[in-house]
Image (cartoon, rainbow, N blue to C red):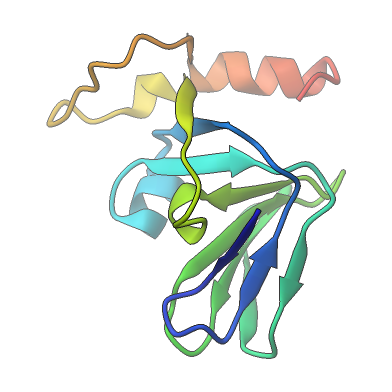
Length: 133
């Protein structure tokens, strides 16, 4: 898959995927203005361009964005290097919503009709603690 930021200064290349996950955590909502629709892109992601900026948002993750136009480019887990790329970066690709996480942090002002597996924040952290991300 290939995608780019709003101004075109950064290109993101990742292995093909057909599913996205949705994160309702307070950090993702603050970062994206709503839930984060993200493609789990493993560690094999290329982010090409010289305007990429990063922000270390927690002990375990950093967020990348274009320093020129502000487009959100990725959420990356620092320990293993896995990337989660906002689905909107890949404009010419279609996806199916496969899961939702941090459902316990979802605000009451929206609900999705999609029937997906839903995990609380505690359940997400338990999965990471058990080594299955």
